[in-house]
Length: 273
Image 1 (cartoon, rainbow, N blue to C red):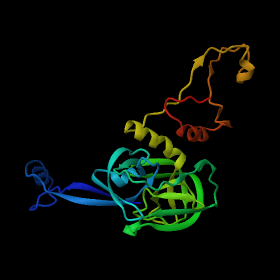
Image 2 (image 1 turned 60 degrees about the vertical axis):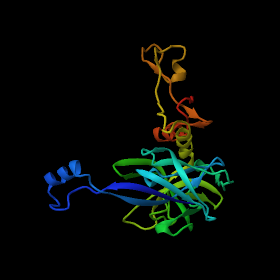
Image 3 (image 1 turned 90 degrees about the vertical axis):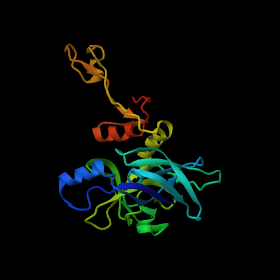
Image 4 (image 1 turned 45 degrees about the horizontal axis):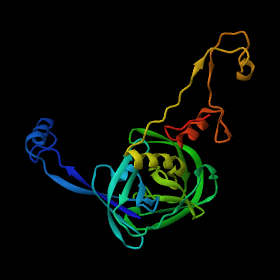
């Protein structure tokens, strides 16, 4: 689907002595600088039959009007449900009672490097463009807009401006990622947010309009000599024992990056053991 957002842009500065900071400040404060409309083009994914649409937050940043166009030509006004700049994800809701096509969301944890993927989007306004490639890497870290993002999927399927928020599909069937970024000085290097990570964020945005913080902590207690061998502590020593995250969903967790990936998909009120 095609998402068009309209932003109101204030034209700062004065028309006479451009570049002079004193006069620029004066005109910005007292002369009511003119406003103009700017449009941002992106893509989205309908995630359920209630009309909720997942896209990138940067597609909608500052939007005063949101318009959604489906592949069959139907157009709808949409309202922003919530956005999270830290994850670059946002949810909007289509205002319609008509049935909507909903793709199946896959399991990005099972994605394998080298498997075929398809990217769908609207690059440079070329609606509903499909490109193919492979999953080049997983758990990539990238930096952009002053932030660092972790755990991204990397693909060589062609992604361009306008693809943001569109689906990355595994074997053309299930959505495993949300296309988000490209490496500007290279070719064939694009990045997508894993759909498993997006699930928790989407749920929070729909329920609360924002992402609820998740906390990872521990409980300290005096060392028990009877439990010391099982905890890896030497008996007779007064070292404190800590509750540790040893596993999650039946999988062993021994390293910090894996622990963070597993917890990223959990709700703030859930418990991990």
